[in-house]
Length: 129
Length: 131
Image (cartoon, rainbow over all chains, first blue to last red; front, side, top):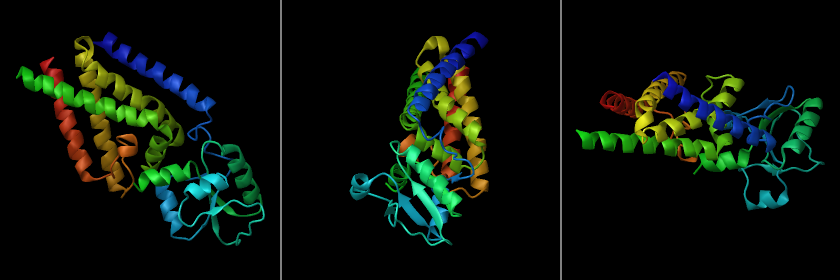
């Protein structure tokens, strides 16, 4: 009995570890959610923050933004002027992790309350289907 | 009785394999769902995202392999007890997010999930006792 349980657990451990390495190399959001003091949020928290009418920034680029975006989101523009009292939610996709963290860090240093909604558009679509 | 046993194995094995595949194909979404339960610290959530779907997959698959059937049924029973506890806590906390049970095809956390997990639990115990 114990030997067979160990077989199943070892297979699980092996497969999970391989998946973990692959996801890490792909820079999956599950490993890159925290950027210093910047909060990352899930879908539920995002919905709660929506009640406070935050500024939602889509950082995925114009082409992806035009194909579809979270309602109310604005396309990232370096010249963007954000009211200081507003919360800022930045969402991205797997191609834009690095610039998301850079922007979040920059806004945080300017005194904004910044939240990261990793892979936001895809999760938004999935949750609203 | 043998036919019922085969049906139970087919049913539970398929459910667990499909459930695992949904999570394995979309780990980021599953991660969001786990975080939305607001029960687990981040590091536990990451471990859960990496290992739980594979445990479901191999124990689901193990039901179809006579050599591993009894142990697989035992693991599935334990998993279902775990799910019942987690969903109960989430419900008590008023969580209304996706349960994360089947990746992108998951439903919202509700009492019916607990009933469903009880059905799976009874089925797995039945398989365990019959093997």
